[in-house]
Image (cartoon, rainbow over all chains, first blue to last red; front, side, top):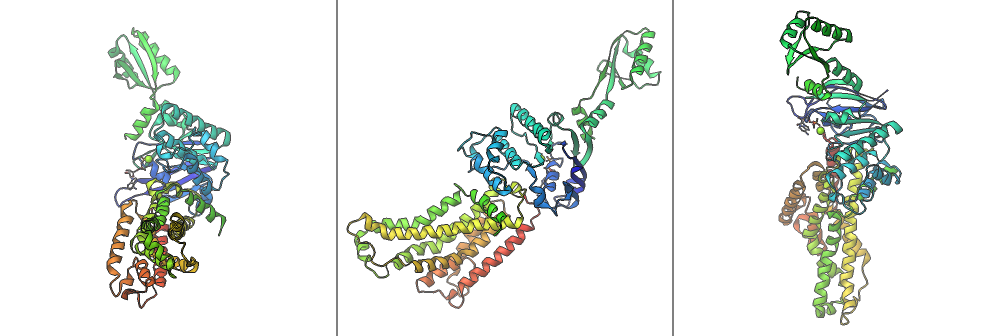
Length: 301
Length: 261
Ligand SMILES: Nc1ncnc2c1ncn2[C@@H]1O[C@H](COP(=O)(O)OP(=O)(O)O)[C@@H](O)[C@H]1O
Ligand SMILES: [Mg+2]
């Protein structure tokens, strides 16, 4: 079952170009869905639409299998969210901030210290939240999202302002929530490495359009298919001619011959040919584009 | 009253803790009575002569209400209503509030209820302040007697009740504007402009059409010198009607807002 299913989402803020065009998004139950895209791609707008913060203009959104608008409060009671920047009432302490949400969600009071411990904010005591650092505010925002033990978490760039240690800590916590409590997580980011280490599924958005959606494995496969072979020989020019004569499409790049990826026997065959023609082969290697390059290639089209 | 409204109210009420508006209610309630208290303690000969007046409390309350009704009460309500409502904009919190499982109408009414409770709180503190301003000089100074007239509870209650009604249009319009505009200066500016307008308009024959004039009008009525602009109409009903109109409009605008955070 899909925890979130959005079909044909289209949105514009003014009359001009739409900010979102026909967005399709399917978040599998129990998955960690990484929603990737550069700044201004439309991630926050998509998430705001899904939570009913923006009036829907076109498309359908259902969560837990129910249309969002008809079941708004019922669905929201099972969703925790952090959109863009954390909401922090500066004149209140961390505990008071969470009490505001505890009343609104009508969840047990003992969840407050639990949530604070999860994000490492226990022991901030009577300190007012306006004295918190950016990272502490972010943690408070995450605590508010977790407070009522929702089965879906929607986190919009949740690691903004966290130090590297904090990022790892929060990632571990999210992974645990997903594994141990089966929480479905939709997490957006403009940084691929952050998603790569956590997500099971990926959606890539650019300029309001979905460029890719699928499992992380299928993205990796795509990456594999886009990989190439680099060959270094004693006479690259001669080798180039030889390979081109054999129906391949070699290029010289950075002192190496660069070929499209091939199966193992084909590679062995290439090697044999080169050696038979008296060329010394120094190196044959597979060059895989990293995800970053794939991401850049997708978004630079 | 459903449980969800009660929880929502508690959630909203918590946000006022240590807020500027909460301080304003306390300071605003005690400010004038405190000045009166100081005045009555310093000019103790005059004070001692007043103690036996059969209208002691009415006179004292009248003095306190004068500045309150004409300027401080409307100004205080303008500030408090705008500050309370703007807590969400200031803390960038609407998006979080609107993703809690609460109906928009529950949120609208519980926020308004918080403001109402604060206004009532203010009236209670103000009356306690008036009582203290009357009674404390007798405790501080041996030469001043405790007022001989018993404290007129019903009179005080009625007076406060009327002012409460008459200030409701201010609550209604300030609430409406503060829910719509991110910038605090919009509700503040509109509030101050309306207040100035009302102070100019009270002398006009049709001054009663300005919704912020009822607190001044009520004060003049209280003093027994009703202004022409309030002679032929029941300003309390007018106030209530304006409040109902502003609140319904405010509700519709709030519910139909396209961006909810
Ligand atoms: N309230 C708004 N009014 C007008 N334009 C907006 C508004 N919010 C976002 N946009 C525009 O929509 C586009 C997508 O923004 P956003 O969804 O915030 O991107 P992301 O979260 O991926 O960085 C941007 O071009 C942004 O300028
Ligand atoms: Mg964003």
